[in-house]
Image 1 (cartoon, rainbow, N blue to C red):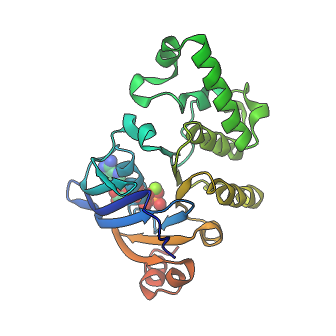
Image 2 (image 1 turned 90 degrees about the vertical axis):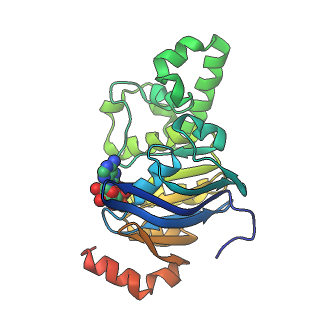
Length: 254
Ligand SMILES: Nc1ncnc2c1ncn2[C@@H]1O[C@H](COP(=O)(O)OP(=O)(O)OP(=O)(O)O)[C@@H](O)[C@H]1O
Ligand SMILES: [Mg+2]
């Protein structure tokens, strides 16, 4: 069900080519406040490429708007001012840094070159504020007690939560989660479902996920990508029964 509010994020006719490969073809989607919108599809369908385009990591053709205002596609260092944060497929943390340091990096402007340089540019009050925000982000994922642990010493499911804290520290209005349940067992998946549901009160979520139980439980609407094209969109029930979706998944043995 599409909300009557102005879309926080809207993409129209996005196409991205890698050489001769059409990774995305005329993809349009929108995300409204309070929504969890799923982007699903077989391996290689273009889901991460979509996130990369929204994050300014790859360039394509198409229209981009925030709050109903047409904008240039963001560059990576502009994400925070657009209120966008993402997690990476996998984890993407610095294994030799502490949990807190990893989360603090999420609040520094990417263009300014990471923690070390940013830390040099911060006065002690700014650094204290950043620490405090990072601790709040860690509390959000129930990991504040792990702040001083080195990331490499933690089990994989915990690192997935830290990666989310790193995205949350910039107080995004739009959170892009790329396979947050990937590699998790049943208990951690259960936690992730509840977490995504709760966090959507703070920020709208665009969710890429292969675990259908997560998608079907937590998403308000879905877009289904196959070979770079949106082959279906709408409510979970609508999409679940769409013959094109069933055939895309069966064809991919998913
Ligand atoms: N930087 C790149 N250069 C060339 N090809 C790329 C690049 N990034 C992605 N691709 C290709 O674009 C297509 C879409 O890839 P993408 O990673 O977006 O798929 P996905 O839907 O996220 O898949 P998965 O579910 O396996 O993560 C694939 O064929 C992939 O090999
Ligand atoms: Mg992917």
